Image (cartoon, rainbow over all chains, first blue to last red; front, side):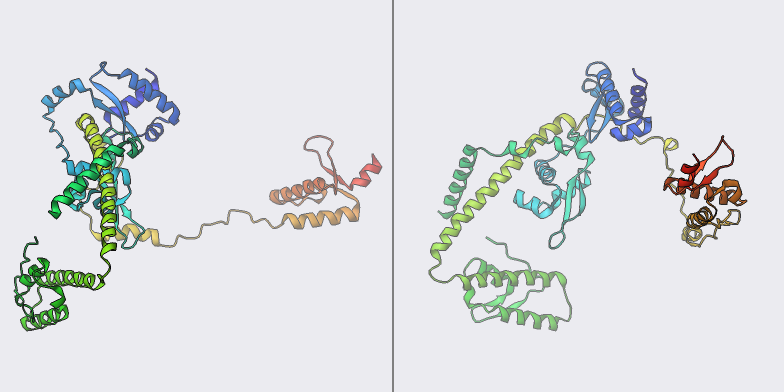
Length: 191
Length: 250
């Protein structure tokens, strides 16, 4: 392996969180382009099925992760506690924040149709969502956005890596079905 | 429909249409068993204020609850006042609009619901991957955190030297240049027009810096075409003449 690649390998080996190309470049006295070339060499070296570790690009940087087929062994060795899954309410809330960020608590509640105070607090506590200053609107409400931890846990290099929101827009048939259900509900209530 | 609100203090109201606990009144109004037209909200408020004054103590929670319910009653009543005869059609239209709004909200919600499902899939395949999370050993860290508590005076004594005006630096070893380029240019021009020419060593002052200024002035004169410079070989004296005189000589 190239000398620069080996130095980057050493840094990633010790780093407690993803390391950005800029930080790698500074540490190795190299330009970012050479760093990216070296990282791709490293990624190839640690391609799936070759080592117990893999290199993944996440949260704007690179990190070593345990290869999937080795996870059981590592868990057995370290007794690693699995991360609690997110409830549907939390997933929904984090989705709204991720796509609309920076956004306010009121906007999240408007989309979800229910008060989201608790959900936002729970996401904040899990380090997935953080405060991002205040909106320049009456009342100056707090703004929320997603964190680097969010990117890590969802395996995203950056927020731009989220699939476009338009991909999830309900089709015409779905809208008609929603309308029909709405009408049925209204009729049931008036009876 | 609406659960009866609890009033620890149990305000009793005495109105024409109703006499009894306030919470019961609110419940009955919400159930439309009492016509809100008949309820004097201002009387309710006056009664409550009197009750508060008599009680001599102020319970924030009870008062807040009272405010919320009175505000609700007021809002309902103001809506009643606005609902004039002949509005039924428009109300129906509004209902339709409201339906469309509700549908739009549902469509938007569905979109995010699906986005959340996609995120759930990503979560399932990424969240449990194992990466190093432990911090670097302390001795490799660039900054060591100060563990022991320091007194505030330590902060003050650290700050004090920064706030003190530093002594002016001693500049006595730096020679101050007495001649400016402009002055030297004027002197050389005078010499040139008076004598028609001179040599560098003949007019240059003693000091090295002053000489440098003279040299710069010469270069400037040459550059502007006001003087002609001649030097037989390197480090030789420089002969300065008027340009036309030189032309006549050469």
